[in-house]
Amino acid sequence: MIFIPDLLITIFYAFFGIILMIIANTIIDFFIPGDFSYEIKRGNRAVAWLSAGSFIGIGEILRAVIMAPRVVAVEIPVLDGIIASLVYSAIGIVLFVAGYMVVNTWHRKYNLSEEIMRGNTAAGILVFGIFVGLSLVISAAVH
Image (cartoon, rainbow, N blue to C red):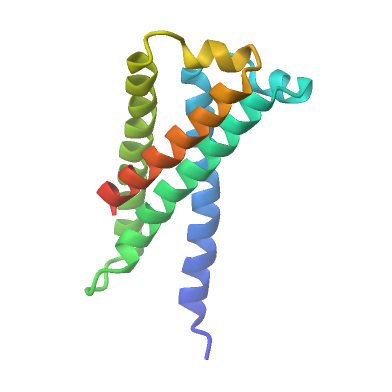
């Protein structure tokens, strides 16, 4: 039998996660120089790879954040779960951006953001991998 309050919480957290994903990717776009919308319209595959990695990475972090309050053995109020999700999502997003900046700084011979805006697909694929790797580590930490 379907328990309506659980169904409503599920629907809420799904939309909550989608909104947080959009906000997080907007923040990431701010820290990586370039006009992503223009570059995607232009067919820049490097930006497409970066964007795909960003959405997958943030999605993984948010999945861990949203699941965390639901797997505890003790019932917690919905508002506490929402607040915890917001706090840990913010932490996850900050760590995600910081992780990218650290890796980009580590690559001293080239700037990944500049290479991506020039259309360097290899740089885009590399950042895709960096984002997925960062998300796996960060999602484990916030979970």
